[in-house]
Image (cartoon, rainbow over all chains, first blue to last red; front, side, top):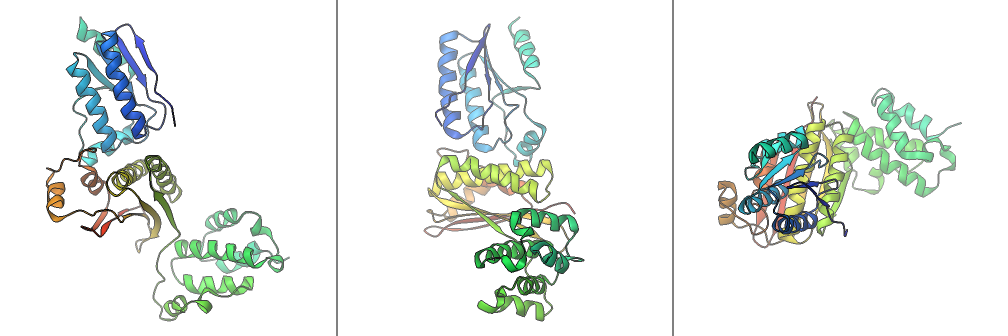
Length: 119
Length: 236
């Protein structure tokens, strides 16, 4: 249970690949450590890869939105990449919004968009 | 040699498809190929429990009679003999036996149970043949319901039940039960009106579930706990 999700830095971006079942405690820990890393590294962007996450419910959506908001407050942009088609459909049907984060299909595209943003 | 498989197979032939029979016998494991004469009392009980569940689930009619025939073939007491005979009565009256199947009960007491319930619901959904997309919706709905239990009631349970309806499709019925504080009328109004904001969640869990499912039923009152029953319909 005592796992943590690694945060990788690429240039001025923080990259998080969520490879495990995103249970609640883990999600909150991630939020906290991301905030801390943004502050320490002066990151311009945070990218969360959720391509391995099979279920995103309203609570996890809220956490993603919260991460997006706090990253934005700190002057960086947050991208969620790799949302699965079935997850996207489910979110639409549930009527929950992922409106505090940007999305991109792949990690590559998110990096591209962030670079565009900085130039 | 009279094995469980040959004896029961002969009874179920024509009512339950060969493929379904195969899966029933697979679930019985080594008991399936055991000679009927060598079954112990406990073995017989195990076989009958599995058969009762499967026959109710898969046989479209006369399931009570089929179960009784199976019991006789195995030399076990018919379930009607010890109970109130309701199964026999249903068959005699010509009424369809309840299209019910085994209920899987998942206790929800702590956060990690949410993930377990989610996975169990997913695999159950796939097992009974719901589509890949529907199964993700099932897992998401169970995730919401389990979370509500942990957050608001502390503990409770989620029950998964596959139900064959009269259109011939297999549906998944999900029931979330807790003995928590319940939801009062004012809060309910806020929830459905979209103005409710909870401390920990988004206050949108129930609304989200209602939008995902095909049937939704909420039973709650302060001090009485909360029961949410919902159904995902399978395609025919």
